[in-house]
Image (cartoon, rainbow, N blue to C red; front, side, top):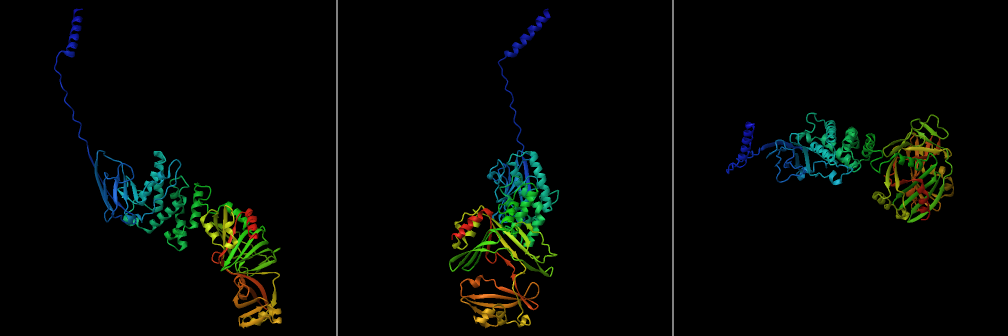
Length: 574
């Protein structure tokens, strides 16, 4: 018991001593923090845009604001495009991207950065906020800056702005790497490597230009970041072939905004599942062709077409407003409009010379002839002229009634028709017809005369007058002007001139033109008359020359059939 007591006393005494057994206070020795470790960083690289990029400001963007700040390491590229950046930091492996601020001359060489469509939840400024006078590169490309590193940076930046996950960014990075290697033939180890000479190759510049054009076509319509690259990958060989077929350089071809490329891009986007309808309202859809099948095609004996042919101050308008055999003609001559309803009645049987079959083919002799099926490529419908194999193309320009181009077109037409006062339907189709070969046809009931001379070479003006206008000869209402020119005057004096030519059948053909008339506008509107010399006969035929309605100022319009009564009433009331 005594031992336990002493032990307790000792412990208590020790506690008392420790709490205040002395007035002396010991000061702890201060601990000096370790000196910060500084790391040195050096980047030696090159900038190449259509050759070495000379005199460009290069910087390491350390704060990820996509700009070269004054406190960030920078250098100017030398005559070989090389540069070197050096700086120190407390971070052993800092994050950064590289930026080349392009000189004015160099900026003109770089394809405008491929524009990015506005994405859901992302403003246009966010989607396309990277400056166009800079090129970028992510860390990890050995200090290289070029159009390929720039493309990768911009695509990943765009996706990042949507809040994409790391996995999504990695997936896009992997897919773009494959596309880049396929498009530009770069190696798997360094798919974004472009030396000065490689960056200036014509092939790379052309492909980049096509990619830029494709991106412009789809800008603002798709949320898929790599849609332009996927489309370019699918279209590259065809696009280059289309450019070559145009006879222009790739850039000159693109500058024409080729419609066939628009169709190829639209079709490819549909095939890739990006879209379900054309990317451009100007492109013809299946629904548009269905309308034209009803309004322009005459196979069902129905037609809804307005045509206007202008030559100088003479114009002839024709409106087909339903029945294909009925038309309203409104002609402008001498500043005056003349309106006439025309009913052609039932079509007379006819035939046309078929050069391939070497015979006349028509309603009464069609054995062995089968017309090729019409084909549609882009905005062009190709058919053949009746009973022949001569192709006739109908190329369609699709307009919106609010389109400035449409407003300009309508305003350019003769004001007497007052077409600008019409309320046109939302969609109008201008049809441009083209035929490159001559066609010869004849009605079964056409006139046939005995050949008045031994052969074509001995034919005279008097022979033609006596055969074709015997009553004029009998009454003396004619005058011989020269070997190939004569005048017929039956109240209206008309001067005719004729010549021999060769018909599509290879036989001689007499063509007679009205070259002057005392009635204003008659000579200008006359298409002439043709007579085939076939053996001992002179046969009346119709010769249809090669034509292009664009070149001869012949306008053709069609629209939904509901507009026909509107334009019909308008023209009737003129």
